Structure formats: C-alpha cells, structure tokens
Image 1 (cartoon, one colour):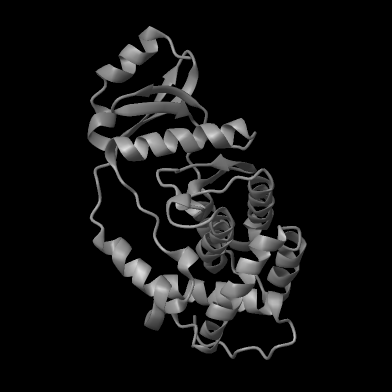
Image 2: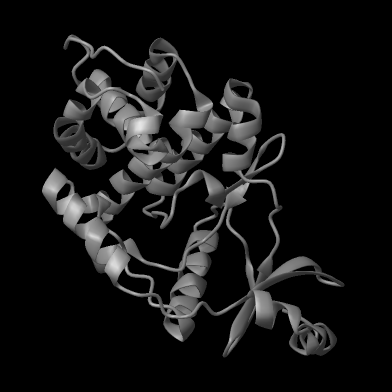
Amino acid sequence: MMSPQSIARIEASPVWRAKRVEIFDLPEGRVLVKGQRATRSPWPHRLLNSLAWLAGVSYLKAVPVHGEAESQAIEVTRLRALHGAGLPVPEVLHVAPDYFVMSYLGERDMALTLREQGLQAWNLWMAAMEQLLQVHARGQYLSQCFARNIIVSDRFHGLIDFEDDPLEVMSLVEAQARDWLIYLQSTLYNLGPDPQQLDAALHAVLDRESEPVRAVLRHAARRLGWLRWLPTNRKVWGKDFVSLQAVGAALHRHYHPLAPRAITGDS
C-alpha cells in the first residue's frame, strides 16, 4: 500500500525511533508512524486492579499493555478489525518489525477541546456518544476510550490508541460497558453539563444500547452510586476521583431517577 520510496524515507528518519511517533507528508497522504513502546512495569496495573476489586467493578480493571512487538501486533489487529467494520479509525498502511504506518486523523483531541470550550463542545460530545453506539452495534469495542483518544475539529473525526485488548481480561459486554464508563469519566468534568441536560442526553443514547451492556451499567450504578454522597471537592479528592463521582451520580440518576440526590460541595 506504500511505495518503496516512502518506506525508505520513513526508515531513514531518526525522529520516530527517538520519539516513537512521527508525522510524514507522503505521496500516499499524511501518515503517522508509530514505533514500539517499551514494556511497562506491572505495579500500576496491580494497584488499579486492587481498587477495581474493592469497588466491585471488575470491568474497570487495568488491561495489560504488553509493550514492544506484542502491543504492536495487538494494535494492528484491532485497527484492522475496526476499520473492516466500517468504523472511523486509522487505516493500517504498512507494518514493519519495529514500527507500523497508519493514516493520520488529526492532532486535536476531545480532551483539549473540552478544556477550551466546555459546554460549547456539546455537539461534539454527543457525536462521540453516537459513534460509541455504532462501535458496539457492530460487535466491536474500544480499548482506551478516553477523551484524549478521540480526534475532533469542528466535527468528530475518529478514534485512536488500541495497544491493548480488554478481551484478555473481560467479556465483550464488559468491555463495551467499560467504554461508556471511561468515556464519561474522562469528559464530564470539563464538559460541565447541568444534571438535567446530562440526564436527558444519557437517556437519549444509553436507552439504545444493548440490554446486556445496560445490565453491566446498572451494576456500575449500584457499585459507584454511593460516591455521590462524598463532597465533590477537587482539592481534597483530585480530579480523577471527582470525575468518577460524577459518573456514579449520573448513572445512579439514570437507573434510579426517584432516589434522593446528594448535596454537592465545592468543586
């Protein structure tokens, strides 16, 4: 899919070998070259797995990122499966023993957009949720469904980062529910919707999700809903914890709309 001249130019560059990634403008178009990641320590994963076990939400456990050739093979396989399903991910253009080349989707991600625009990015946020429905409807799932891995501009462009495979440690349904939890956890803080607006959006989208996935989300609502009673103070708890509180509260309202609401503190 790539000419020998383009491959030679990529392989002659020291940039991606030092920085792991590099963007090239080639006759084939703008592409991204991705070298292999070194193997990571398992200790952060063990800590996260312990927290997921204590909270009773095993589907939030860390997914192993093996590094080196194994992670590259996983990412190439996952990208090809998602692309083959007609989903908006980079197309794999060339695979070498120590790197691969894919089409380039853009540099602006949802995380940056939400930090800069907040609620003004509501339509982009909703478009990403609609796309997540499509991913699951086609029998697929993501890996790291964080805002930083969703490429946007003034519209939704696509999804990146597939170096791990959740199906190594959980079922397909759990992996799909995990997508929703990660997406909400990584977006709600900077999006900043009022509860009524968020509730209406979740009903509009999650009510169209499959029943098995909704069953896992109901379980998450039961296990995480109590977090809404803790003060939502970022200085005390940190942004990640406050973001998880927001997810727990939103899911609890979604599945228990008549339950009493918590009193929030400073955020």
